[in-house]
Image (tube, rainbow, N blue to C red; front, side, top):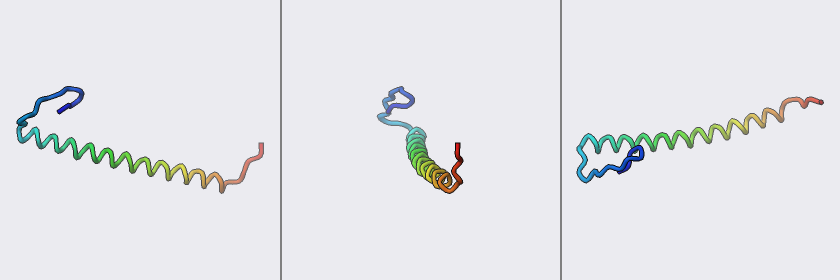
Length: 61
């Protein structure tokens, strides 16, 4: 197993170590899910801003 760039031989990890690995995996999955959600919201925000810009009066230079 590699953690922070260091490889560990965990042929028989302690129960606490196994629990922490599960916690890390769950946390990593949640971070990934939140990043995907953020990308969706950022895309929606861009679309809303463009739609608003189209509704505003055009300024003449």
